[in-house]
Length: 160
Image 1 (spheres, rainbow, N blue to C red):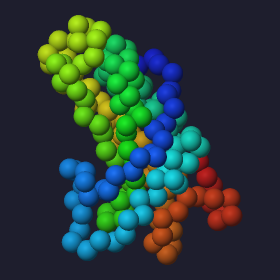
Image 2 (image 1 turned 30 degrees about the vertical axis):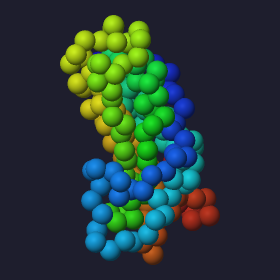
Image 3 (image 1 turned 90 degrees about the vertical axis):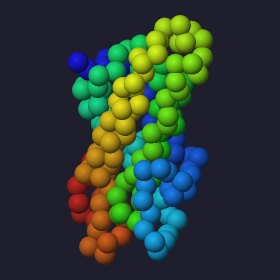
């Protein structure tokens, strides 16, 4: 199906939460640090990871243009959160909850019926998953010393 819309600005990642506050994140017993590297991830999003991932996702999403308009109006794209999870050594994400039909602001409360929004949060999750895959495969790597890093010209490796 796909969605023919302009790529929005990437989330700013400027209002971090403790990763342990996320329902889907299982922290190991021993804390391995609080460095979620949002600044570096935000830089990678600005450097093209967001555009690549959004275009890939929008080619395959099942969201309608009307549902996407609602997502944008509610600021749900901006609320996506990406972080480095030091416990699992990968990029994690958090998807904001989509309000229920009763919680929608006007005029969306009249345009959507109960049950119309069931797949919206799932599609946002798909966007976040696509972003993490692009970040992990094209922008973020573990180097020989098991440190988090981005490809750079100095390392002699090709960047994105």
